[in-house]
Amino acid sequence: MNKAALPIFARLHALQTVARVAPGGSRVIATLSDASPLAALLCEVNETVLGRTLAFESSVGASLTLEVSGRRVLRLVAASGLPDADSCLAAEALEDEHKDDLIKLMQAVAAPRHELRVLATPMTRDVDGVSVGLPVALLADLLLINLNPLEGDLPTAPSTPRPAPEVVARPTPRPVTYQPGDDRPVTAPPRLSARLGVGATAKLEAETATPATDQAEGAATSAQGDGSFLITLSRNIGADLMAWLIVGGESDGATDGPEEMVSHLQGFLADEGEALAAQFDQLSTEAGKDLCIVLGASLDTGHSILCARSGHGVLLGVIEGDATQTVLRAWV
Image 1 (tube, helix red, strand yellow):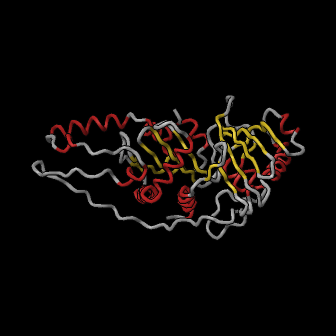
Image 2 (cartoon, rainbow, N blue to C red; image 1 turned 90 degrees about the horizontal axis):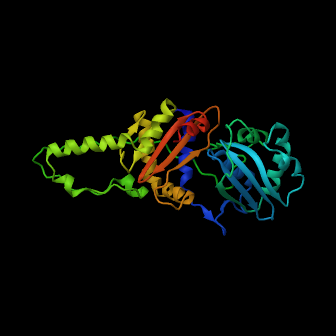
């Protein structure tokens, strides 16, 4: 695996972290023992692609509410217990001239050795394009914070950094074939589907059907899968989606991309499927609601990780470069 791919699996491994929910529904993103709550704040912005209002609240009593979309801070909505916020509050959209004031506000609300919480809600206004506001990559560069820390390079990360996962090639299992007269057993749901909690129920009727019926049902299932939301999303993204797989739902087992990368994605889901399912559940209490998570990348270079859920299906993929505009265009 080349060096550029290592951050992909480091971010995938980070999904196993159990979120702490505070009273009121907010999440704790930095504790008293974390040396850099500011890094956690920037990472939250960096992982926000769709329009959201992020309300950050510190245990010191200060709070900062930002409108964020496409990994950009669009506007300062509210500030409490923070001095010199008037210039940013008065701006309809944050520009380069506001970056120094915004950084001071972020540093004040994300004070070291204090707990920091965030509450994400949908934005109440439409955003015309994704080129307005201040990119989080610029703010991170000015603060010397690495948004994609690697093992051995964690000067500004929280006090308990997550190690990059060991990259080990997984053998491809040999397919099992059956003759028309053989008795085929009804197997348990696939391991990945079971770990993710998505539907992959075995059908007794299919096990006793004739070969002709099997072929007809297979063609029907393929036709349905081609029209599924996750398949449509992957097609809309196009060649930028380097590798992907789908577990559960109509298109269960669909994959595309280099075999080695798909194998690593399968391995991650087998180990961390429950953690990923928990991440989706935290975003929505409505079962089967279409959701999309994009893990942060170094905007112009590197990769982004796409995690999407629709119904009983989950898509995990790797997007080359900045996924901000790519996902926004593909989301239908």
